[in-house]
Length: 430
Image (cartoon, rainbow, N blue to C red; front, side, top):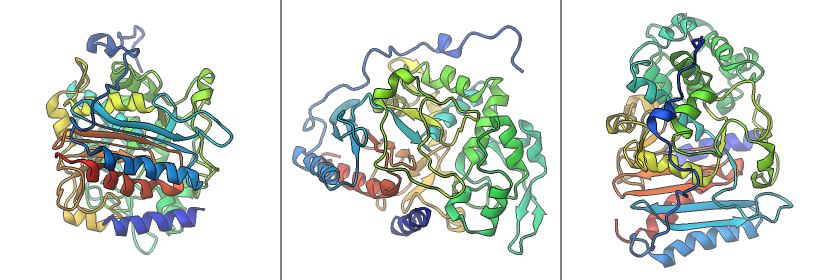
């Protein structure tokens, strides 16, 4: 399967252009306030009043129904909104093979790389508190990153001439890689042999392991999708003095009332778990569809969280609200603005495998639209997706947001294209 996946990735990239103290401090959620988890984030609005053409929204509905009927998907859930209100929300199919429950806003999905924006926001709260510096070398927090090596075409390595910065981790310009993306390359094989795919070690130890692996490029030279946010998670642990799961809960998901979002789920929630049509395979990783109920040894900042559409909408609306949702401030507006600043250049994008596509850059933790003449969402749109097809974006220009949930690795990029067409074709009043 992995060969087909890689072909899909590359084809899409072309098609798209693309020690805590003895006395613990009180949880930060106590000072930030907490959004009531019992009050839904879904506020129904009238599609026409919100600027959508209902007939064209039905194109999305019919398309997803047809894909389920054709056996392309077990199920899906799509949510579209504007001005803080929901214009469209519907579940399709079933939560998994043999199930009768239709996916809804409370169904739990593995959101994989949609973990990355959550961990980045967690890190940004530490930046605001002065505990983390975006432009500091990663070695300030993880000393083993002071002696990095860069892979050469002949298989040798040379010492890096530039330090890896915290900012590089957030923007995937660190020089780190994901081995599965070019699994047959000599560098990917070195990474696999060096333990890139180990999950049996704690995050801080994993960061030490990765520090020994050669970089694809000098830090800051190219964009390569990578283990960067996993390493950022280790930085968060050092800067906060908490394990990543606790830091995320205290600083982001707890205050937002995201009670169904975490690195593992209680067995009591089993009836809400969404499952794929079939298992998949990634080189070196195997089947990525982990058991929701198993607490991991290693908290993956790059892809370990599962969540619901209702929960993730809270996070999206916080970003849409410049860091505040229902009166609870997670970040200051200037911090959210920093996340939307493109960290790449044409040269950086050209030097790597830049998946986001034409008209896109990459900010801190997510992609950003820099030219909406080439991309459908408006300029400044912040978004990212998960390898199984989950996706979200917040479009400040059009005050529009969306959350899409599936578990279908093979069709992830297909629905990125479909969602943009469906949603912006239906937007009658930009």
